Length: 87
Image 1: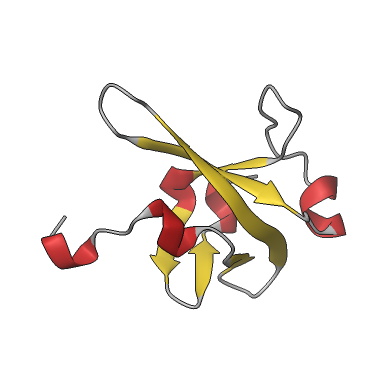
Image 2 (image 1 turned 180 degrees about the vertical axis):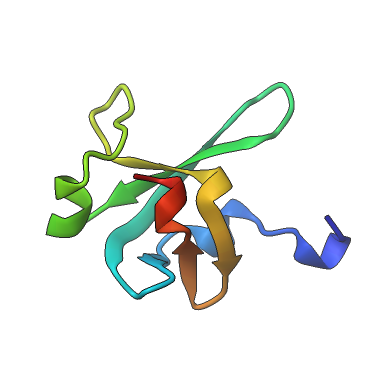
């Protein structure tokens, strides 16, 4: 990853998470990561939509819905995820 491609968590938190087709999941509440390596693991959602609640997303130990960070395909005004990598 080039230096210009790096994103800081504070730049992603609060952004709306959507699929390529525009379906909304909610907002980024936080990001979980592996402390040893710094690898990003999950996006943690806040204000999940009905759609997000219905598709059986994985939950963390606090019962919050999560999306695998590996499904993120773009970060801009929105965090865009590949729905096929999630469900």
